[in-house]
Amino acid sequence: MLSEFRTHVMLASIFGCLLLFSPVSQAAGEPQLGRVLYSHATNLRGMPIQGSETILSGDVLTTSEDGSALVELKLGAKLKIEKGSSVRFLGDGVTVQAELDSGAVVSDSAGKPTMIVTTSKYQFAPAQEEECRYLVQLSKEQAIVAGAMKGNILVKARNANGSYVLHEGNYAAISASAAGVPGQATAAGGQLGGEHAGTVSAVIPDVVVQRQGQGAEIPLKVNDGIDREDVIGTLENGRLRIALSDGFSLDIGSGSTMKIIRYDPKTQQTEIQLTLGRMRVWVVQLTQPGSSFKVETPTAVTGQVGPDFIVHADADVTRVYCLGGVTSIQNIDAAVAGQVILHAGEFTEVARGLPPSAPDRAPDVLLQRQIDRTTVAPAAAGRGRPAPAGWHIGSLSEAESIGLLVGIGAGTGAAIAVPLITHHGPASPSAP
Image (cartoon, rainbow, N blue to C red; front, side, top):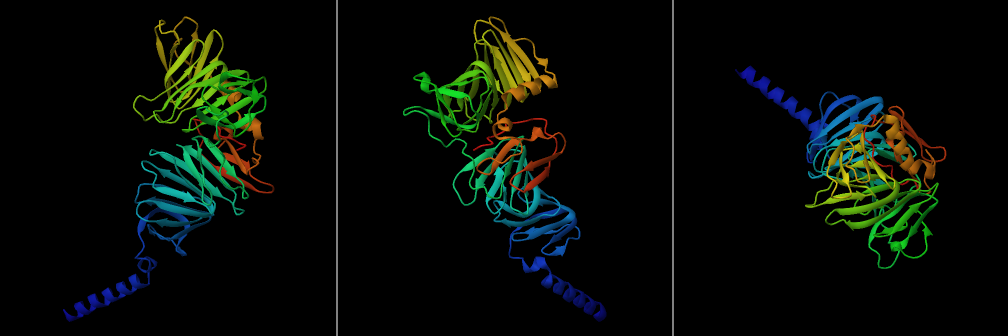
C-alpha cells in the first residue's frame, strides 16, 4: 500500500511540473477563444501543434509554406489559415480579433459578427447578422486582397474615419500605399434643398444629370451626389454606378435615362423610374415593416425583388433578368392582370397592355451579355490596374478558374484562390 501511495504522489508531482511549464499554464489567465480543429506543419506559441490545441487570447499561430490550419472559435466562427501565414488572436469573450501579419485567412461565420480580421491599416468584418464567408490576404509588402464570397463585408480604416461595404461576389485589391476607404455615400447632394439619395461611385464619362429635372444638363463625375428627382442620362458610351446611402447599388448602362422618385432609407421604401435603357440593381436585405423596392418602366413594375436583377426598358416592352434571389413583375397598368415570379437565371417580357410572359430560362450567353452591358468598373479603371487612391474593386466573376491574380501596385502583386461564385453582386467603384 505504501509503495502504491508513493507511486501516486510521484505521478502527481510529475504531472504538476508538466502543467507548470506548459505554455497553456503560463497563459492560464488569458481568455480561451477556441481550439485548433485541424493543422498541418503549424506552430502555436512557437511550438509545433500536436493534435487539438486550445487558442488563448494573445496566441500567435503560424503555418509553414506547405502548412494550414482550421480554428473553431467559441463564438461560432471558423477561420481557415492558409500556408505561409501568421495570425495573432485577441479576444474579450464578445468578439475575437484575428490580426493577420502575413499570408491569408478565410473567415466563415453565421449569426452575429463575432470575429474581425485586421491588418495594420484595415479591419474586415461581416456587414450583417447572417452567414458570411470572406478571404483576406496580406502580402509581404502589406498589399491586401479581400474577397466577399458569401454576404457583404464591412471594411474600416483603423486610423481614419469611414467605412466601405464590399458586396458579395466582389473583391478589393488595396495597395500598400492606400489610405482610407472609397467614398460610398458620403458626398453631398447636387443642389441645395435636394433630398440626398446616393453617390456616384464609378463612371465612364459621357454621363449627364439634370438636377431635380430642371436647368441645364451637367456632366457627372465620381463622388458627385445624387438627389431624389435628379434626371440622369448615360449617352452613347457612358455608364454609371450609384451607391445609395443604405447600401443598395445601381449599375446603369449606355443610352439610359432614369431617376429616383422615392427614397426613404429609414422605412426602406425606394422607387426608381427607368424610362429607357438598362439598369442592374443590387438590393440589400429589406427588414423594415412595409419595406419595398420598385423599378418602374413604361410598361412594367417590379414588386418584391431579390438581391440581383437587370431591367431593360424600351418604349413598348420591358425585359427583366433575375441573377439572384427572386423578382416579381407585372404590367404597370393595374387594369392588366397577371404577375410572374422570376428565380435566378430566368427572364420575362412585359409588352404594353399585356401581362408578363411566362418565366423562361435565359441562356448563359444572354445573361452575360446583359451583365457586360451594365458593368462599369472594368472599363472605368482598367482591369487589374490600381485606382488612384490605391483601391481596385472588381467582380469575382472575372476569374475564369479558382485562381485570380490581381496587380495592386508597381512591382507588387497578390494572388488569391477562391471558390467559383455562381451568384454575382455588382462590382464596386474602381475609382473611389
